[in-house]
Image 1: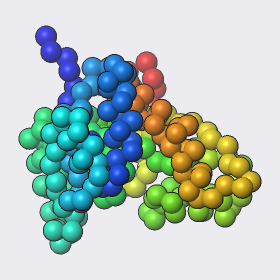
Image 2 (image 1 turned 180 degrees about the horizontal axis):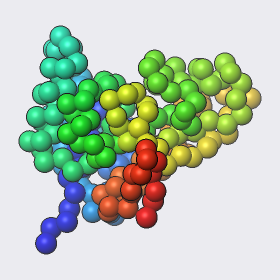
Image 3 (image 1 turned 90 degrees about the horizontal axis):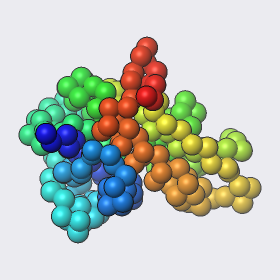
Length: 210
């Protein structure tokens, strides 16, 4: 019996988190998960190149071709159903999809966010903006969070978190890099493995790892 779970990765840019997932799969660390498709919201996303170099199917669904989020979400939902997605991973995917996708794939979509949610998250907190705000506030620890995706930005149940020290001479770029290396690239594959292997339970908006 084939228990392989189809993992579809959504990306908008460079795909460094996608690369972490590809590397983890090669090491046998995605459990029963297999990356079967990468869907990009921009035609020039380098994530597409990474996918092609590793023999992974690619699709583009260009966000700016759509006038509103509802029509984009509908086509994304249809694409994910076509790809028989069991698990969907946001890897630097910059569009908040609406209920059409979130309800269809409830408990199957995960995102990695570059801070310790509920700090420095929600609308407007993405990419370097997060790290700029962290440094402005002078907090001593930041980190990364993997959480389930819901229609509300960064509000889904938290799966895994890892703290990373903020250094006095950090720039947004150095902090971003350290959080990627020490937290994001470790947490995301681990969360995908747990989800593919049926090890995460959601009760009252909290997750429990079996």
